[in-house]
Image 1 (tube, helix red, strand yellow):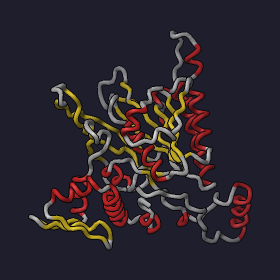
Image 2 (image 1 turned 180 degrees about the horizontal axis):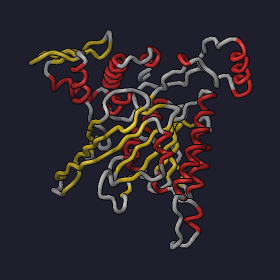
Image 3 (image 1 turned 90 degrees about the vertical axis):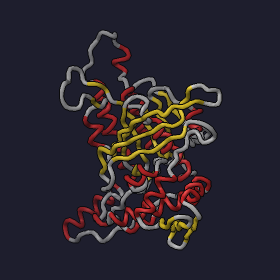
Image 4 (image 1 turned 90 degrees about the horizontal axis):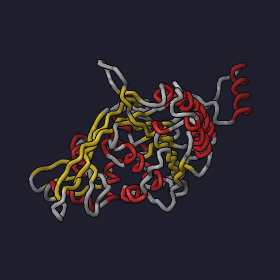
Amino acid sequence: MAKRTRRPARAGSSLPKGELGETLSHVKTQYGKNTVNIARDIPQPPRISTGSFILDFALLGGFPEGRGSMVVGERHGGKSMLAMKVAAAAQAMYPDQTPVYIDVERTFDATWARKLGVDTSSMPVIECDSGEMAVDVTEATIASAESSLVIVDSIAAITPMREIDDSAGDQHVGLQARLVAKMIRKTTSALTKERLRDHRVTLLFVNQFRSKIGVTYGDPRSIPGGKALEYCTSVQVIMKNKENKGKDDMAVEAIEMNEHAFTITKNKMNNGPRSGEFNLIRVGEDEGKIDDSKTVLAYAKKFGIYSGGGTRWKLEVGENETVTFGKAEEAVRALRGDPEMYWRLRNRIISLQAVKLDMPAAFIKGIGK
């Protein structure tokens, strides 16, 4: 995975003249040079990889930088796993910065995070004893220049201090939703301020479905935190998990593979697929890795850069890089054994999809770089 450095401030086109031009110049002087831009100069935000090729393909690279996104699902659906994969990608892409994990649930598992690729020696984990603390800490870490990613796990566990202090019998209708709404307003403002100084922080909320009581029609599930959370995020993903069990070397039942499925319920960044599946290995030396090699080759074939038959196959990894294989299985093994080649092919396919969707040339050029 290529390392990135933050890009310098963009140079805007000429502003309108006359009274409007004077007003806009005054706004830039008072609130910052990046406050006012011509519409065509506002770029597509870069993405941070999710670790899953098919999800990256759907999002044209991953979760958008400088924006808020949300992962939601049932228990044990892969929400925190996906957040850890994004954290690992952020560490690889921006080694001079760090992701921050806001552990509202206090259930962070360093061993599992390490298996998922996270460098646990350099990622801060902040445990919050109240919802108010979670709100303040999230806002503060977003505003810190060294942060690349802020993960809040989870919204469902945010508990207002008043609810903690009062008796268990006291009712606090809508108290959590109001606190989360305040969190949304404060973090949205913080993200905007950071973008104005060319510091793009990715904010990722983890959330859990709750059941509506007495609902006999429609979707019986609700998302904690109120509607504000759904409105403010640019990307929302629902995660599901099916465990594939087998026997280990001692004939004891064990999980061999997690079959994760996702549905993108909101994507304000681009068009494209809205659902997909990927497998997470749960045994052996590759535990915690996502096996995407066959999926990548299938999409390479769709885009015409992987072709052949029998004992002769050709794979165009880059515009000037072609690799030949004797059998199709050899290509799968080659991608599994060569992460750099896998990453170049992944970027090539996502770039071709971005061209298909008529995305800006600057954005396409920056995919995976």
